[in-house]
Image (cartoon, rainbow, N blue to C red; front, side, top):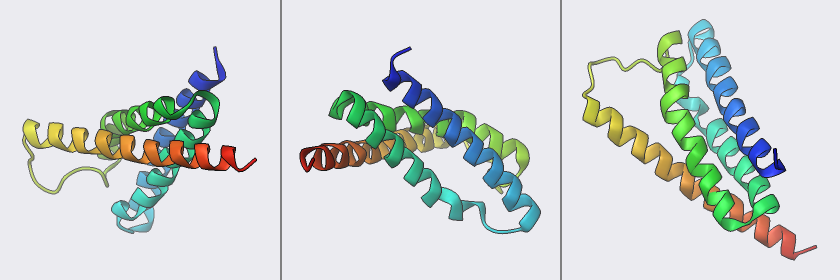
Length: 125
């Protein structure tokens, strides 16, 4: 398996582990689960940076979007099952879909940031 795909896979696993640990800690310690989004954004950007270094700007953007997809589906399901990710009121399928699309788009933007950083830092060497 090429190193780029390993990076994407490990990034996805990292996001899911972060969601699991964060949701568990939030439930046990009682802090707002939403505060952990900054950590998720850091993971998106860092993994996309690494992908950008390995395979270029398009790979970085795709990696960020892919991590957003994993986070907005499996990650949300994990946090929902643990408790903190569960909405306080019933939400429609459309609202869930819109949220997923937003998170995927945000992942793509952070992937682009990671790709730009990879290009800028790589050019400086």
